[in-house]
Length: 156
Image (cartoon, rainbow, N blue to C red):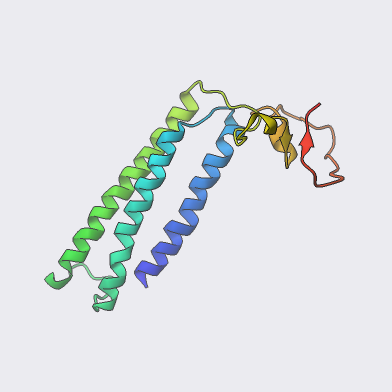
């Protein structure tokens, strides 16, 4: 129960929050995050969470009760591995806050669409928010734009 709940919570919800930050921070702030550190953050946190919570499945199958202040020595090995994983997860969380600080205090400007992969994609976008500057100007549109088709929009 403990392992499954925390897998769903951390791997589902928390990683979705991280993904949202990395996807939108360029458009919101107009500044790019250090991508290599973002990748290190992902792998460090991903490894830490898995090392923390996967052994809890074995502990549950071995009969370790929940919500106890002390446990028999038979569970010490798996709990030590879980503790090591939690240190990795905390290190990943600290790295995330360092990345946030570096992004918001840095000077690496973000273009209109940081997700383009070739020069031919530079003036096209499947949605209008990536055609605007980063960050978009206040009151960019006088009225809500009407989308008439679903083809990628092209800049003039």
